[in-house]
Amino acid sequence: MTELVRAGRAELPALTALWSACFGDSTETVEGFWARLLPQAAVFAAKVDGLPVSMLCALPTQWITDDGQAVPAAYLYAVCTAPAHRGRGLCRALMAYAEKALRADGIGLAYLSPAGKGLFDFYRALGYSEAFSRREYTVSAEKHPCKITRLAPSAYRNLREMQLYGNCISVGEALIDWLRFGGAELYRIETAQSVCCAAAIRNGGTTTLVELLPDVPEAAEALCAALNVSEARVCVPGEAVPCGMAKALSKNAALPQYAYLGPDFG
Image 1 (tube, rainbow, N blue to C red):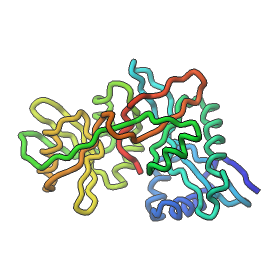
Image 2 (cartoon, helix red, strand yellow):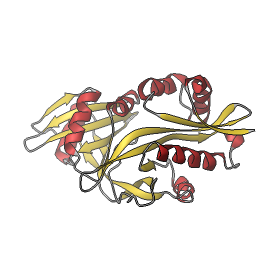
Image 3 (cartoon, helix red, strand yellow):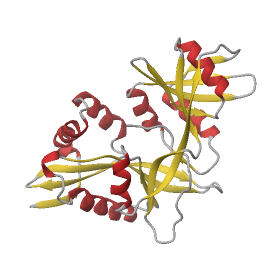
Image 4 (cartoon, rainbow, N blue to C red):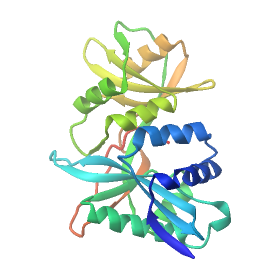
């Protein structure tokens, strides 16, 4: 028997095992997510014979429109189905169930960041449209006169909010803390002309600034020099690379166009 539910804490051990099986994350990592994002997150699951085999988390955020209006939004995260149960329509049914519940909660927009090109087609069939994009480029390390300071998630979130003006996603401190837990180092970079926030992830020999606001290449170059890395890939607002999809949960709601999603929290 299949049952669609809004999951509670009693299901967390089974959901943790499902998450780990689908994404390869350790139990410690998944428990780190629960510690930071519950109870803010709504967790939905499809159960077969009482066991969760498909899941998704809906994280509360806001879409800030071009004219500065804040629309309650849900970031659909950790969407997965156990390999043995794929191809049966469970994820499709769970998505519809979660969207109905979120709509009843007053959420105006659901959005997600597909992990691969094929998933864009999957979510497009569920009514999602490309709505978020970014631009990427590479910088080489170069010393510039600037001040670089490590930030706590709360301070980073506050500085980030100051840099965002509209057509973007606003997130809370808990998601920033989850980004840091995943390996991001959070910085304030003061140049002669600007104050930037930057989130840097170093993975082996590769460094990526998964966020730089505002887009100041000089700040990215200086951070590379301070981190003693030769170069880094930089992600900034722009229209070059599609990175997210959205679906309006009310009939007359508009959708973002080339909006700024922010860093990949996966």
